[in-house]
Length: 455
Image (tube, rainbow, N blue to C red; front, side, top):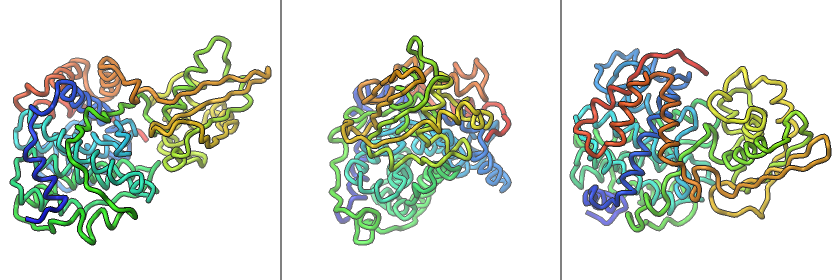
């Protein structure tokens, strides 16, 4: 077999085992599962995932895999699609800085239903997740920022490659079948950043999870694909990226330890987080009064402009990727949770006034660290100027969230569909994932109780 990129990925994936991972990496994978399941449960109540679920359930497929937060089961591919759409619907899922993507939502959404259907243990889930994470992030480090700048949603484009490698590892596909699966996945790669701030942004993750499972199953059944689907003349990287692509050396360094995972404290676009944290710090200062603000200047790194949409948001999906909205809401309400992304809040006159008083300016003086640094300068009616700067947001490289923060996030998000008793049971299973004999009880516990749609 030729030394193609797909072959390199397949060979490296086959040799990976949980013993390679240091204990902090295993703990990080568990946090990634818990965080992703939290945001999946929260997102399951939104209209986007419910639309996807309604269409999939109408097909009447035999129930085999759990739909998280919707109180039932469906077929394997549909479960991956629905759960993946829920996982990204709130824009609350984790980030990878070098990948410029959300690594865990497609991986967890693809792997859990596959493990449930095949009755596989938690140890296998940790191994498979780690393979997918390492492949996706290493490819992102090699292909970015050109891939992202071109307009591709990297979570979708590279996520499907990493998630397919993970699914192949989970099922133990042989080398030639894994290469075929990666070739199939390469031709499924898509996803445009133009759809940021719409329901389709969440759908990108659902499609990625479904396609990864589908590519794996097709290859397992004998479907062929070009072994150079990733790096051949007309392969993914030469076609999608305008710059020369240098294949990475997978696992060197181990990205779980070298770059880690950024877990989000706020359900909004990552480029808003440093500014939101600065806004909350200003709000908490003695004597600060949002009602007396006359002007807000938000200085951001030029990278912010590539991700955020600054036209006035018409709905809560657009608000999540709007810097003015997120900063104004944090400053007005003293928090930024899913409760601030509600139609009743969107029309608040006090919020509108603060948004209109906010100007976004690019500042080359902020560090080029990939973590979207920001500085806020707030002028008030009494002539005072209040300033807060954040080079790294909470959850970022030097400010990681604690285990207790992730658990609290899960408890908050899970409250929309799980009982308190089930919530604690799920937390225990995920934190003990390496000793879990079967993924099935975890998945079934995540079904929860049906809840009404919320836009």
